[in-house]
Image 1: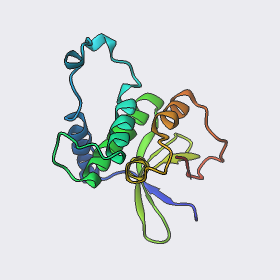
Image 2: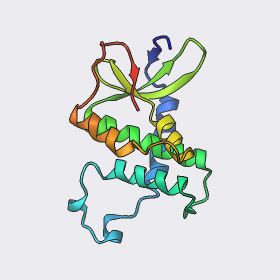
Image 3: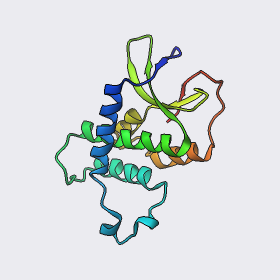
Image 4: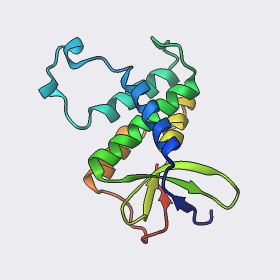
Length: 158
């Protein structure tokens, strides 16, 4: 696939992304609800939650909320991407491809690598035959254990 053209998110896209994240956070129990204190919550818990929710959906568990699977994937994908940005210093951008497709992506500072979080979460949720890579991918990004790529290439991982 040809190299995408990147642009910053518009204010409207940023607001929509924030709403999706808030919608995902609404699904989380408070630390106290699960016998923890706020001090017990570590930085990797949100991506673990996203992975567990994706696994529950693909195994057919009924969710305690009434949203479509697509909407849930978007919410969880936004939260997953936001955590990559927060903990690894990546940034949200909109990638436009020559075929007209646009995709929300989180990108590394040098633009060598990117993740399409809404897509990867949706793919994991939709297909039980696809490996649930969410926690491992997140850990690799945060720990910097990533493939080599030339700056500005926007190589999609995940």
